[in-house]
Image: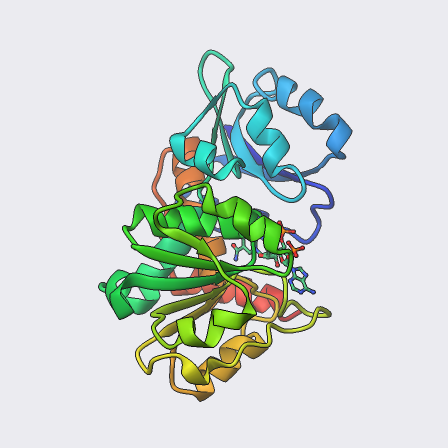
Length: 278
Ligand code: NAP
């Protein structure tokens, strides 16, 4: 029986066990996927013991993504660009391969929701709010899909400037003074901050200047329709919620551990939506 895990601290909130448990049942695979709560000081010890315990691999979530990157024996090029991993695969020789599938998950959901051509809306200009780990993964995903101009805005402007180093020719840090002017020629606006989450404030951006064919994406998925998405919807803009990224980022890991590429279906989405509303 193949075994996988998700490690975080805390971990009770994670929907990953629901997602992978659904796929294991759906495809009749004899396997398990268990949540593991480990404090930062104990992560290295846990990772060292994974092979001996028979794990095929697992997911890594907050706050361990950067530490797991440093502790992986081998990493993908994408993980190195992002500086964090969310998916580990234990190789037959016991070494740990670290990958980051958040970037893939984000763009796969854009493909699913907006269909082809989203990369060239408004000549491919995107604005990303936020400069944390999720923003970094999303920016790498957008670069891989060829977007020529990505603008980053963040409360702590130094962190936005740090992201420019990923690709100085295509990424620019901006502040509030040029925002309206830039939004007028933006095809994709993304909230990658934690604003919009239940109990946090919301991202207060004037959406009126966005072109009529622009799309607005939020990676927050509790609630599923954030205030930002509700306002975009009201303006008639295309909207992309945060749940699809969570579902799609899980696909490569499941395939690597259990040997079957799973599908993100309406049934699976419905299962998680029901759980989010409890
Ligand atoms: P992080 O590294 O802690 O970054 C948080 C970001 O939010 C930073 O840019 C931070 O700005 C900004 N921020 C927080 N509070 C703010 C406030 N009051 N006003 C303005 N900006 C604020 O977190 P992360 O890992 O990037 O995750 C960000 C969000 O994405 C979380 O809500 C997480 O749950 C969600 N997420 C979703 C998925 C998915 O699959 N849908 C995947 C990963 C993450 P400063 O730099 O100024 O602090």
